[in-house]
Structure formats: C-alpha cells, structure tokens
Image (cartoon, rainbow, N blue to C red; front, side):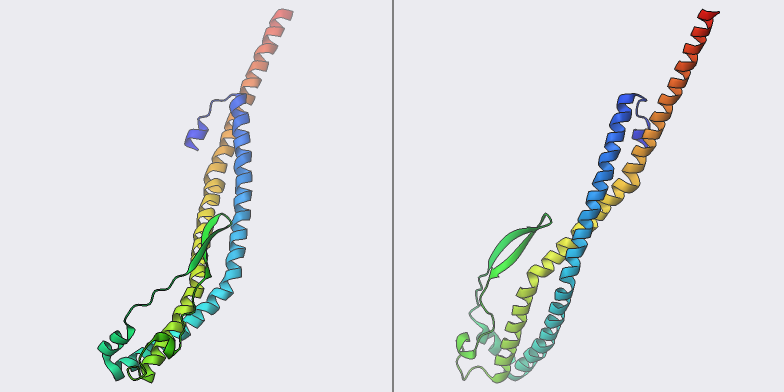
Length: 210
C-alpha cells in the first residue's frame, strides 16, 4: 500500500481513488472473462492436437526403422546421392488474430508424399527399402506441416492464459487491496476531520450563547 497509503486526505483524492478502484474491479472482471475464453479455445484444440501428436508419433515409429533398413541395405552415400538435389517446398501462409493473439495458418501447400516416378529416381538405383523410407518420411512431414499452425496457436494461447492470470493476480491481490485500504484511510481521516470541525463549531456556538 506504501504509496497509496500516503494519499492526501482530501475529498478529491477520495473520489479519484474510489473511481480508480472501480476501474480496477472492472478490469479484473474483463480479464477473467478473457482468460475463460482463452481456456475454452485451448480445450477446443486439445483433442485435435492430441490426435495429431499420436499420428506424428506413429509416423515417426514407422519412418525411422525404415530409414535404418535402407541405410543397412544401401549405405549412407547411396541414400545421400538419391536425395540430391534438395526439394524446394513453397507454402502459402495467412496471418490472423485469435482473441488478439497473432497467428498464422497454412492456406495452401503441395502434397509431400510422391510416387517413385514423381521423385525422378532411376528405377535401378532405388530399392524398395529406400523408396519405403522416403515415403514414410514424406508422410511424416505432411503430418508435421498439418500440426504446426495448431501447435503454434496452442503455445501462444497458453502464454496468453499465463500472462492474463498474472495480470489478474496483480490487480486482485496487490493493486485492489492497496486502493481499498487507501479509501478507508482517507475516508477515516475526513470523518475525523469533520467530527473535530463539528466539535469546534458547537463550542463556538456555546460560547456565543453564553
């Protein structure tokens, strides 16, 4: 309360402090509603995100053993030669806002999974193990691209919920009690001053009558 407790005991300061306390109370209510909306949005994303993570885990469990099989059969140098040149991928991204939080979504992208002919690899140079590993990782990359915007939104919503909770706690547990205490202190000082003034007036009136 330190600084607020030293507010000068005037009616103007009392009105200002009461108005400020009212604004803080309304601010807490609005922040609570915002936090509830953010948490509700998080719950909507929780099940799709969990399903996507399960699919990614399953895709990784399929892709890495396939890669190990291909490495065992054809070697690192052969797989590196088959992977050249690098593949360029272009995606279209649009920006948006969710409860004031900037987010991005992928609006268009090419399909990553390809046939052996689409990869442009000579039939004799690629065995079934290498082709299977490539297909498994392309499917895994598809899953990762699908999940990336949702994961980013979940992370930012979580950060926003934490930040809003800190703001609510600061207003509710520190600023509001300080303002309420300042109102009590100023109001008591004014009431005491009024009682003293009334007592002096009664004494003056009594002297005049005497």
